[in-house]
Image 1: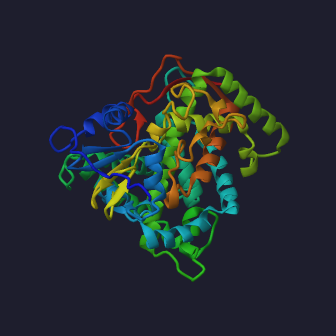
Image 2: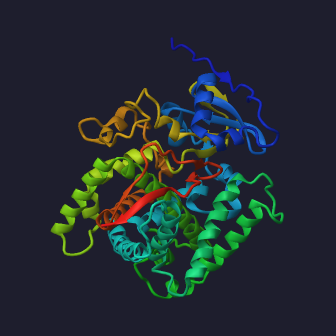
Image 3: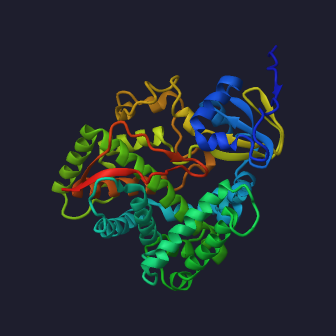
Length: 448
């Protein structure tokens, strides 16, 4: 006979502040909150967050795997993310589920083939070269905000073929619109009320829609290599194509994801390379060797050959994941590691906690890129020990684009600049929505 595994009910959530629950604890220090939840409840814990106490938190790779693999189709993306930021990024790929998601992803995959990525890489170099000309070396150079504008320029160049009809002032407004939409996730007043984050997010969404729609007629008329044109023209094997609304929704979400998460990853890499000059020089030597072999800018395969930079990127994604948690909602009753989650439960899946568990990582708080080297591969200790791009059918479609962007940028910066960061510096992170360094990530920057 097979023994019956007992199933427990999700306990009541711990007390939190009215309406926002334990949201303030998350904003102050999410990793500390993860540890408190783990120590008290284990892998599946109750939570109260913005507006409701129907939350659960999944910690550790075993629990995360259940939700991300979603074998019984009990977890949905759309209802969870719509609750937080639906009015601002709704109908983007991350918000779609099941058959609809499969259809849209199947079409969009054609925009991220290797040939397409090669073409996007060419556009990246153009934007990076132009953007770095404006960087003025200084002590305390605000790297994060400089990166924020530059990664938007990269996204505009590669995704839209450049903003030839948009002034620098307008591009600055587009950047602020993305920031407003992302930060609206932490709004306490979640209605279109004046002087609130929600209102600023709504205004930002309208600006972004106008911005993208302004490019649709030309991209529908002529096929070019940029992502917007690709989305306008690609179709499935059955002849299905995106409507104008589909293209706008996907573009706004993709541009946010591409430039927001890349900015954070790059700022983290600048910090750790500035604090570990031996790694900065090792990466610079590899880039110099690559440049010596090439006549022009490196292509996709060339960037992939930068092994040391790849190790550093993976380690920085582990230490400070640009998306530390992902959200789901249960669409039917389900059981996770022996705990029942009723239908309608909002679920926080926390990859960042898995990235820092000593059960899977040696000295997990230490910057040690070699842990990803072939002779160690600590990321293979569990299939979901390292999951900065998520997992399952919703795994990040742009992960290879992101890797190429990060390496292309660092290749140029290593060639043109050197920088340092105080070894004792710890970035003061704002975690109200996607994390970012509140102090602008100061580095001491010098031109070579």
